[in-house]
Length: 468
Ligand SMILES: *Cc1c(COP(=O)(O)O)cnc(C)c1O
Image 1 (cartoon, rainbow, N blue to C red):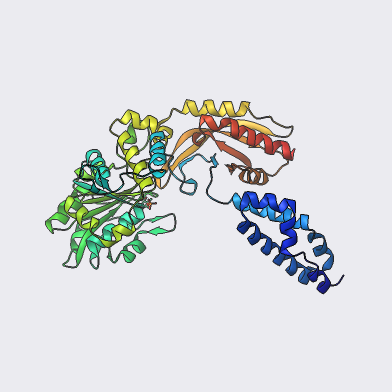
Image 2: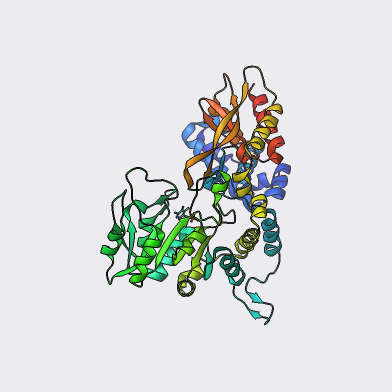
């Protein structure tokens, strides 16, 4: 058969539609999706006839062959959206894996509020329009000691909005050592530029003194900015200016101090063996005028950017046109309110907020989970298992230098390449994200809850059985 003839013999769409199998596919995936993939598939076959010759293409032309291929593509398309994974990497706040896990009460509230009507912007007392942020404002005032508060989409948005509202077209003074980049897309200098503020760098990379800030103040100055170097530390021959000193100097010139705290925690974690990070309350007590932080880092809530501080600045921020563009939806608000409520009782917060529970959990529990996982693995000949001490991380740009002791299952896959093993685990319906270390696949139990052990063991056993 020549190319032209073969092209002419491609079955018509109706021939495919008439097949029993097509009916099944359409029932599951809709006619529109079926036709979209089918047309693409036929286009590829035409292309193949023209470029790769008749023989190869001929086999692919069978109606059932084409339908099988369409089904496969639809199935794989289906797997592409956001879905649950098992995080065996030991990084608690993994930005790529969705950062913090919500507490039960937050999840329940989201379901309730998202599936039905709610009081999002409705005042039950007057029966008319209410303000979206009333309740969250109260919670944040109570918990942080700030005069006022508001919430936007994420901390990047918060910083941008604050700078736009407070210091548009004005100079914002920042130390060179604090020109942070977070995960590639958030760079302090770029955020400042797009907010309309003018960057005024002072000091050197490792040292900045109060005098540097003061020398830079002029009638063009809009604010002093402090950025928490959340994902790196400058160590050694260094000097920085305390919040109190900055506040005192700024207030003498009637200027506000803004601080981007990054993670933002509401209590001192040093009691739990983690290095002391500045808390939001400390910033407020030091007189910082506006503080911003993420809702989904150490706080353990949904993605959001929290702004707390002096009433006069927060009102200014709330009236900025960007506020409307950056406002949070009802699901975020519901989850954040419920998460914050737990903080009235710290013990409760540590138990019920998964991020905090993982951070403060006893290492011996992690070891127990590692033992349990190991006992569930059916080891083929040539494969070796051992429990190793590992180093878990907080992640999310918090505690950059510290790791904490954790336990992991290390799987030595012998002749099978570890890369392949780890790859196959990622392709499962519920993907397992493991890492490779010294040629072994590492499953860190810090981020694997008890209730996922069976599923994880099943997945590891399945892949081991398939390849051995
Ligand atoms: C994480 C971080 C941000 C960005 O916060 P998002 O909530 O991810 O937008 C900004 N600044 C600092 C210092 C951070 O650590």
